[in-house]
Every structure is written in C-alpha cells, then in structure tokens.
Length: 453
Image (cartoon, rainbow, N blue to C red; front, side):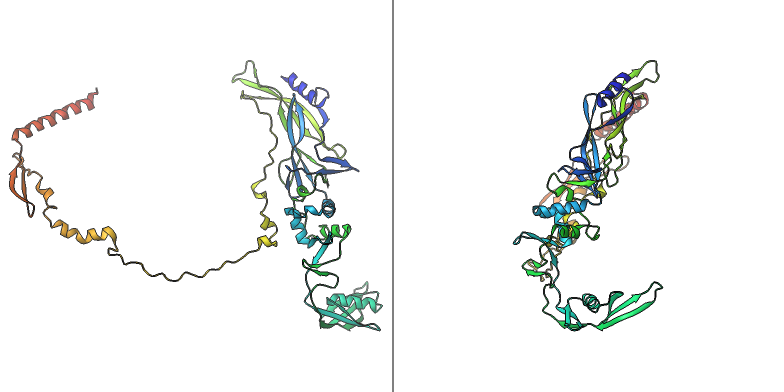
C-alpha cells in the first residue's frame, strides 16, 4: 500500500516518488500581472468582508481522482478604485444592491437625461456671507469660511491661517516659536439670498446636481482613502460585470471560510486500510498523501507533497475529502438590505396609529351567568329531597351479625307507584355456599403463590 501512495503522489505531481514541491494549476479567474495578483469573482463565490472565497477553485489529481480545494483572495487596498472605475464605465450595474448603497452613501447619481454621472448636493437655506475687498466691493459666498478664505487671498496675505469667530474673519501667522502674529481682520456681512441649490450646482427634478463628473473625479469620491465614511460594500466584487479582475494580495490555498483565511494542509487517502499481521488487537494501516501549502510570491500555488501512512485499530477507511461547502458562520450572515442601507426609501419607518374602538353595547343578558355549575349548586338541596334520590339506599340489603342478610325493597314511591314492601332475600344456604367457594378459592391462590404452578 505504501507503493500505491507513492505511485499516486507521482501521478499527481509528475515528480519523484518521494516528498517534494509541486505547482497546482491556477484557478479560473486568477491572473498574475506585473508582480501582483488579480482575481475576477464568479457567481458562486462568497465574500467575507474584504476576502473573496472560491469554493473548489483548486483541483488535485490524487490516484486518478479529482480532489477539490478552495482558494481565497484578500482584496488589495486599491481594489475600490478599480471597482469605481468599472462602475463609471458601466452605469447599468448601479441598480445592484451593494453598488446602489455605495452610490447612495457617496451621493452619486446617474443623470439619464445627459447620460452622465453627477454629484447630488443638499439645498442651501439662502443665507449668504460677504466680505468687502477694495476696489471690487462685496463678494458673497454660501459659507463664512469660504468668504474669509477669499478675503485672505484677495487682500494679498500669503502667510497665516484664516479663521472665523462670530462675524469676524481673522488671519493669524504663527512663527516657529509658536508666537501668534495678527495679519489682519475684517467683518463678515450676511444677507438673505434666494436659497435653493448651491451656486455650483443645477436645480433638476432629481435635486441639486453638479456638472458632469469625469472618471477621476468619480473614482476619487468613491475612494475609501479619501472618504472613510463609505467603504466599498462586500458584495460589490460579485456585482461588477464579469469578468472584472480586481487587484488582490497573495492568494490562500485550502483556507477555512471567514474574514481571516490561512493556508491549511489537506490529507488525501490513497488506498484501502490493510490489516497488519500478528497484531492484537488487530491494527490496520492506510496510505495517504498530505498536500501542504508552501506558496511564495513568485509561485503562489506551490505545495509540498508528503506521502505517508496512518496506523489504527479502525478497519473503516477514511473518506476522501469533499470540497469545502464554504458555509458562512452564523455571526457573518449577510445583513438585510435595510440593515445595510437604512436611508433608502423602501426602508423608511412609517408609524401607523389607530384610534381605539368605541364601547360596544351588550347584545343579551345571560340568565345563568355561572353556567351549569351554578344551576346544579342552587338546585342540589331540592334534588336530595326527592324520593327518586333516596331510592338507591333503599335497594341495599340489611346485613346484621349472626343472621342471614335481610333484603327488603320498598317499592312505594310517592307519586309513581305504591307496590308496598317486598322481601327479595335469597335462601340462607346460598350464603353458606358462597362462603365455601371463597375459602376454597383463597386456599388455591395461597398454594399457587407459595409453590407456583
């Protein structure tokens, strides 16, 4: 059987029959480019945070049978920029759940009329902030900080920082020793403007929209490095047009599901258990091949092949490993759409209020509120006083010590019949016979309990 294991290892890796390194075939969707790695996600892949898992991505031919192993890829830091550029070029993917939430957070919309991407701004309240600059006069802005910064530059002040405190715009220079040197100040005036959309946007039925965005502008807005408040959702790699290759770090071989993958070895049985002669208890040996990941930056799919055998008292063979089902842990289940994007219209909470019903009139008054129990308790004494209730005690025989039982029945019932007192006592010998029968039966039972049979 050891020979079988060595032959299987040789067939698997086309190397010598001893342990050694081998290179697995690269999975579908993976590519190496300029010293880096890229991966194009497929429909049956699963994503845990920034890690994409590819079930059954790797195949090893062990002893003529294909053994599947998963692979995993951690998205590189620049993957969101690549994904944003693809979304810019393919606006049709904007309706996918993850991409739609990403765009909603960044306030990016597709303008169907102009066939361009635009940024949506909130309307302003109409207050304008102005500063006087000689000789041009007042210059008005939608914020006090913008007005103060403009006054600093228009006044020819090249050093210092502009800041607003109340209605005063001040420029202060701080030297290397931390000393503050006032450079100048002016008053910020206010006025009520028309309000509506900011001056650099256009009022449309869809809101205040910026001019058409270029691809670099679009990518910079979605880039998490510039805006940490809206990271790329985990489902985006699966929602991009296929095949879209995203940059990834060095991949993982046979990892467990989750956000923290690690390379894991895989043991593959290569033969049936064989009995070991002259062993008590009987022992069995079974050959195997261990496929141990040993990747390098230049060879990310390199593995170390280690044939061996295991000895045990169990004659049942170890089953060949099955492809990792890549089930998500319970705590990593995907959140619902509204948990991810509570701002969308479909997830708005609507309070439903209802007035209490008015008091309803009673349809009827029950004649017996306590039911049949109340009727029985109220009529019990009257029932006991009837002749029929006392009939049962009168039918029992009168037994007295030393004489035959006397059994007389009074068949006179008031209102029904007047048959008089009737004697229905059986002959006295009947009771003697019954006594003998009972004594004989007791003796027979006692004998059976003591001797059996």
